[in-house]
Each structure stands twice: as structure tokens, then as C-alpha cells.
Length: 288
Ligand code: MN
Image (cartoon, rainbow, N blue to C red; front, top):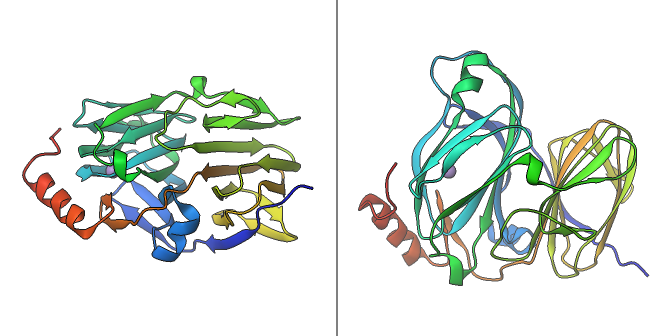
């Protein structure tokens, strides 16, 4: 018999806030002590839902800032994001592309709308996810993976519905992202209403973000900008999506280690957070 993962928590966002002057986001995941058990290895998720930006002479975004102890993963859905970092990584990601930046022991970067997008204006939509690093990899060398949409396997789920394997595996297809701990990340886009059946390992954490449309599960209907967090136990997740639906699915083996998160740093102890601030101030995380 199939054992289903049950919903543990649901959140709906009603308030957006600005990150810099370029990213108007719903803050949907934060690493509280209670939540961390069910969202680890994921730490934070910001969803910049579709928003029209006018033509601008100045690029909007977030200037130079550091990170340590995590990976920041940016999914572009509409518009373009440009990034530069102190490890020498950089580039523009366009709709369908993903940028996977490992901050490790420390990185400094900036994140802006691309020059081209700023000149044309238009609708901008993206997600930024923070993935925790296990204690043993927190001080790893920083690196940057630019994942082009053409390298992301697309699996047809039938008429005008598809699933992209961004990380991990789905039915034998492997996603292009290199991860430190076992992680599956998929997104699904469907033109028509459809039943979806997923299977993950029992003991793993699973999160679904609804970007567009509706999702029916456990006889309840959830709308866009809702996030569902599941119990660790169980393996199956069966649900129905409405027509014109877009969702993001995160699954991963939890990192059961203490978390101390402060600003752009996510470490295991307060002392490590103090060290991170001091190392940044002393230029040890590099510069742009
Ligand atoms: Mn950042």
C-alpha cells in the first residue's frame, strides 16, 4: 500500500517586501526552529511573483553583499537576472534558466535586472531559494553553476503538461545541478487540469510552491502564492492541478544540525556568525 506524505504546514503570503529595488518578493520560507525540521535542507524562499517594470536607465537590484554557509539558487521565470561574484562567477540568466551559487566559506556578489531587461522593461518573475550546507561543507570553496534551460531535462506528463528536472532524479532522468546533499527540484507547468503522482523517500522533506493556478490535495484547494510543507514520513504525494498551473517542488534529505541564521549568513553556532561578519569586514570574502 502506498503511504502518503501528509501536509504539515501551509502558508499563504499576503505581503510583499522589496529586496534592494529590483526584487518585490513574498517571503515564504524562513528558518525558524520549528519550521527547520520540516524544510531542511532548504532555509529560505522568496518568490518575486509577476510584476511589470517600466523602462529604466538604471539597473534595479541588490548591490554588493556577502553570503556564507549556504547556496543561493535563483530561478528565472520572466525577465532576466544578472549576477557577478567574487569567485569570478557571473552571467545573465533568462526565463527557464537557473543559477546555483555556492557561497561556502564566503562570497560577495551583486544581483541586478540585466541591462537588456532594464532597457526594454516588462514582466519580471523569479524565485530565490537558499539551500543549507552541512557542517562539513560550510567552509567549502565558493563556486557558481549556471544552468541553462536547454540542459534541464523535460518530461512530458501528457497533453501540454511537463515536468523539468532541475536537480536530482525523476523517473530515471537526472537534473544538471550538483548538490552537496541529496536534493530533488522539479517544476511543473500545465495547460490543462491534471492528476500528478510523486514519490520520494520516506524521511525526506518536501515543499510545494504554487506560482500560478490551483492545487487540490487532501480535499482542500490551495491557490497561487501558497506554500505546502509536508511531513517527513510517507513517500507518495498525489494531487490535482488546475488548468494553467505552474508549481515548484522541493525535496531533500534533511540536515539535522543546529542552524544559526543571521542576515546573509547561515551557520551552526553564534560564534561562527560573529566570525562571518568579522571575516567579511576584513575583506576575507573577496570583492567584486
Ligand atoms: Mn545574495
